[in-house]
Length: 223
Image 1 (spheres, rainbow, N blue to C red):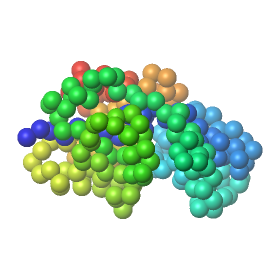
Image 2: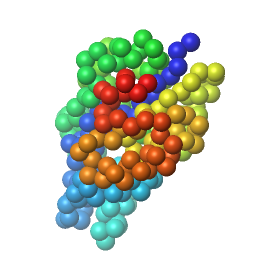
Image 3: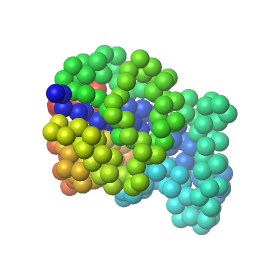
Image 4: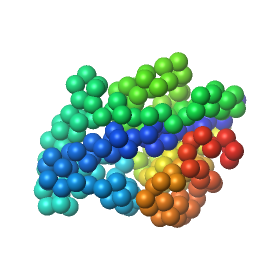
């Protein structure tokens, strides 16, 4: 039986600086008139607990002195991110895995996903970028009660495949802490361009990461 290699999506499989991150910027700007920098978003992400970009947007707006109801944040965020019929900022995403990478990894591992995205959002990107590839298992935000950094999603995967080793690949401290809580080996992704990369590397180390790569295409060399 193959071991399981489980990927986070955002920042690992998909490049989201112009989609989710841009939606945070546009949403905060809409409600507060202030523009969020990518560095400030990285600062919040490194604090942990801000895996959900709706929650993060609400918190930043509040910290800027403009409290906004969560439901209002969600509605406006989705206008930016999804647009009409999926033509919003989500279309600015890029796919990180180089051609052939997933197929090579699949020879040795069963490939799955554990993401903080809702399933319909994950499906939209997977249909676009990897229409012929099946990730199994796939655990999304709507499949768990407690979001990352809770280990619930990884524990669900481990319970579904007893006796099989699970390795998780993620790009945030919440990913690393989720893996640590589940007792799952963690490989961190820390882009060379990350504005707070040194802090992120220290957080990965403190959470027990077994390796760190700059992007998913380097993961073969550490497995």
